[in-house]
Length: 111
Image (cartoon, rainbow, N blue to C red; front, side):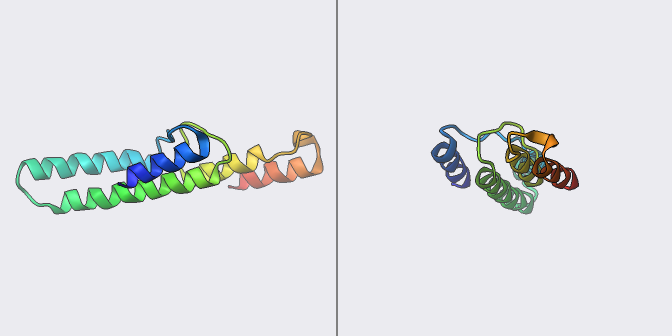
């Protein structure tokens, strides 16, 4: 259900499904693997429950990234990187040579 909301929001905003490949999602895949192994070996359901919470948090991060980014981007590793991309894309046409452009680049380097 969470993935459907994430994909739907991306389709609505960008016209395509988000493809961020975040670090949190990569860890979430390992949690799902551990939960599936625990389920198949009849150990405990707790690893699978933890993986479900991790998957929900991953999708919430994806929704937040979609909210922050003005245009579609692939391979955004975290919400922090999405904020940095947003700041860099808001640089005025003069770029680094204008006072506003230098201030934005300094702020982006701070992030």
